[in-house]
Image (cartoon, helix red, strand yellow):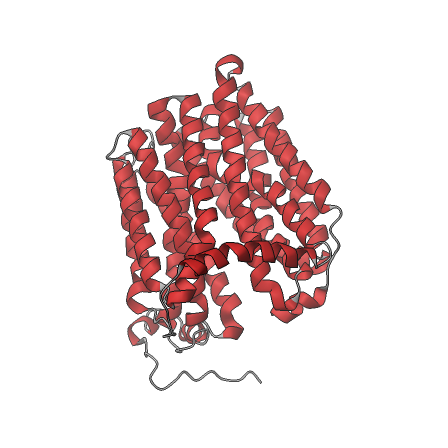
Length: 449
């Protein structure tokens, strides 16, 4: 018989919310937290809902089209992708220091509050500035968004019971997709967009407002555990950078692990680039309106959610390595279709494949890491895994932007074909490197559960 969960006597009763949702579900949510508070669990997860609104509405949709509208197709594509790459690169460089600051001082929420506020203010400012200054504001906002994730993720152990961290993290991811759908529906309904579905200054204000609204519960209701803190010294910063070299040495000690990390750099590059440029590609290469492009992105989001469940089941049956090859084959087919046919119907078919593959990469490649990493170095290897993902998010967009900006004048829409073909080449390199990675040890996954 399943043991009944009894929250601590001093845990909040959450009576007002309990009356609005099924009691069993609400009690189960409270059972995930250290305090027994369902509201605290939901408040933490709602931050995922909030920041995904920014990621989808600004990074994936509005900003690229906004920049192209004012600077022109070639220059706009280049400067947008450059702003994305620079902001992510700077974040990747300083991430060890940002993490060290939090660990040394012993606090998460103050840093999270500062970077969230910077992201909100940068987003709000974009629509009310000259487009060049708007790109600077966007780069600052995107840097702050990436930095805030460090402290948001680090708060999870303060909120969740150790045995329930995976489940609460999964709830956050699911709510993140819901945030995508909410802001997409609002924009499609014409809230803060013009008659043609294009972004306006109000679009950036809407996103900043929604981010603030749904992020606020975390700061008001999540209790950070008290821990001893000390001032940060220069030696701590140096040690943080030195840790990276040590982590790489540790990765070399596990068969296939470093090779997998290198492969991930190449095959995640097309994924990160597609997330950034897909809306502009749909409008300027395929011929959709901005409103239609938004509809397509929302459909692909739904496909990614559904496919994620299927890839997870397949990974349990086939193992993550074989499933990852299937995911990357799906991406390869989608990229090949887009390269060959710049037309709406083929694009929708290819987009469905890319959407399915997007969900698959998120589900499967971290399972590969768990198979390959030693049990006592999983956290350290996930840090390297994340850092490689950020660097791949720098290279892909800027290569894409350079190709489009350089060739658009002479090749017209064929410039987009070449830009997408470059992603196909990077994906192929990743697959070839991945072939030498072993299956790993299934018991590593069992230890994580």
